[in-house]
Image 1: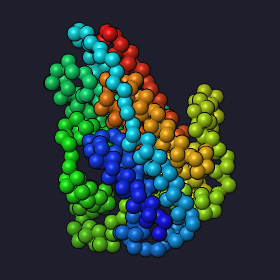
Image 2 (image 1 turned 180 degrees about the horizontal axis):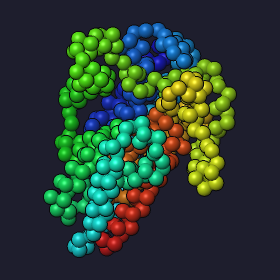
Image 3 (image 1 turned 30 degrees about the vertical axis):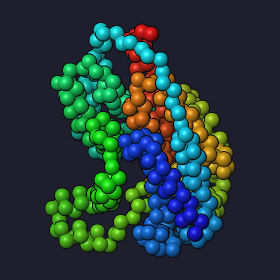
Image 4 (image 1 turned 90 degrees about the vertical axis):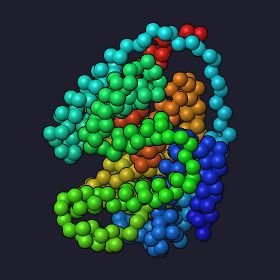
Length: 396
């Protein structure tokens, strides 16, 4: 009953953010991402699956104290996030005049060349081979390319339409041949922010339902229908596998946080204050050669014998770092960083929103040590380069 009450309050918060900002806004979209990801099992229990327990490597009971504590942790983040962002006010920067001289397109041509090279290489390997050969360098290149493309789309007004069209076409193929879902999502979110008008609630609900069906059954459709098998097999699969929000990905994150409150695995005590040590650990790994295992890696070994990877939880990491204050601190830091970026890099308005959305889309299911090497570093590099270029093309 406590879980349902907290879920209803969070839903009211989401509606209020929608009324203030509309759907075409990073603040609301991030809230929606965290809300549905964190509460997927709760929604399944009470509205979709209608089961009391979910058994696997962790048994979850909706009537347990651990269940209430897990949902309460989510509520602490979402509630603090709502309060902080609902009353957020951004200062309008001083007016600046852009120089009329055109800035160089060398980074655009360089990006196109690099993307075409990567496409030609990736088209000859499998996704598994690509993941095994991946490292911080290749990941940083991927994100920097996408960040810079978004900058060109939103901010580089002097680029010719033909070059922008060719550049964007190459990006489409590049997103496909990264064999990852994040670049595809990045492309879709950018288009939504760039071209869509204000989205009304009446269109969002049916679109959400359709998206839920697609996300639930697209793998089965690919493996069964597109491989030439009988369509009856596909529909049999659909009937035997009812829609479940938690099956899309969030199950592992929920289980880990639930079991933390339920059994308190001892290995987590070796990871106190990862918000401060994760960057040091990455430095020691790449400079001194020290082996550093993330919590998600250790959790996978502990729960499933390292037979497959488990999505982690940003809420769990915040609790490990700062107890119940962790989700609150995490939401406050998110507000502070977002406000700083929107103020400091105000000329990157939509780009900052896009970065904010994509960051939480990944961070909600992982930990800071992973985000530091796959997202934060290329983001900082991108902002430094763009800001340096910006200061050369404006005067006060």
